[in-house]
Image 1: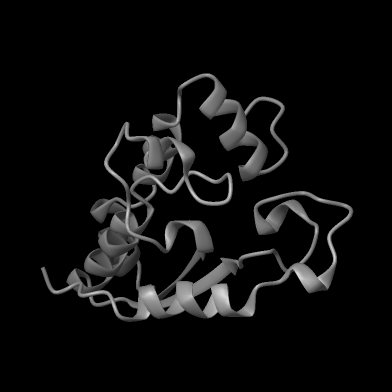
Image 2 (image 1 turned 30 degrees about the vertical axis):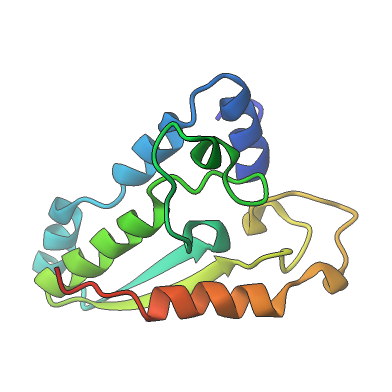
Length: 145
């Protein structure tokens, strides 16, 4: 990730270099059915899956302006489709999932773990409605295909 301290600055750096595909490649490498099969074979019964608010939206066509722009400066990419893959892989291998909104809109702190390091962050920036919207989208997805 070079000198990027969080996903926000990484996205800005990759967007400027026209290399946003690197984020999708990184995410895709972590959604393998082989990994879920290995977890199930090892006796794992449940998996915690943290996801950020910016992937909880319908993806724009790759290469389009909306795809390049993202959401609030973050890269959306194939995020929701990859989350769908996680759900399908877990179902296929009889694993329970704990889907966790790990980075809420506006952040929960100014720490990099919320997607953006910002020492000036204040609690008033937290967007409860945006968090509920992201959770609602994920909860109502049809993963039956």
